[in-house]
Image (cartoon, rainbow, N blue to C red; front, side):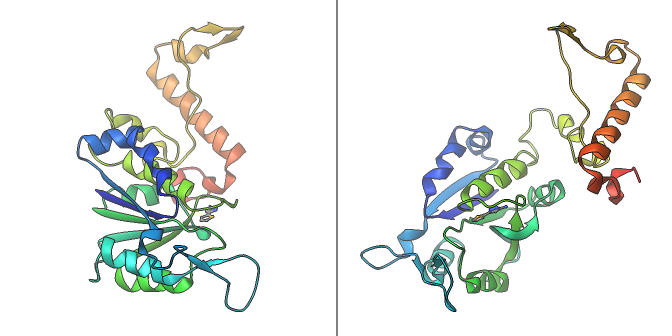
Length: 239
Ligand SMILES: Nc1cc(-c2cccs2)n[nH]1
């Protein structure tokens, strides 16, 4: 999998060299390329923004640098196997199933907007050429798409076959199909008693049936308490 990042702050992605994703890059599972959008400007000030047509506060990212960067980084041929991701507060909520789908992509290009956003024609052009995803991480506003791109990268790359040492652990995580789309149950390890707090007895019983039942009940309880929106989804197994 090749991952490209277009940003006016490409140094944000240096962290990928030290994190888990860096490990994947080393063993050849993932190839990472960060690019400075200003490299595709031609004026002395390397300008990437301008005032919004129709008025309004703030600045909008000009389309020209994006188009020239696309030409060089992706090419000028249409290819639906290339996934272009625009993080944005107005995007579709990013989910574990979206991460799972993207984990089989051969190419993902992250377009990290700043200011008030990117000229919409950039997204329209990208849609005419590649598979575009406008995604939101949640109902809050970041200063730019870089942090969102890092979060999406981690969620996707950890699902790439061969990345996780023990793929079985993926099956029991929150939102995973193996967890019926429910939140993960509480986890415990030794010591059995810690600062007056004990591991639930059932988990020390060695009775696998009871342990499975306790874990399921806890997942249902937590999901109903914290994420009632998940309890009606088809994958949740609870209604
Ligand atoms: N979920 C989300 C995305 C964003 C931004 C993406 C690009 C600039 S701000 N804020 N919040």
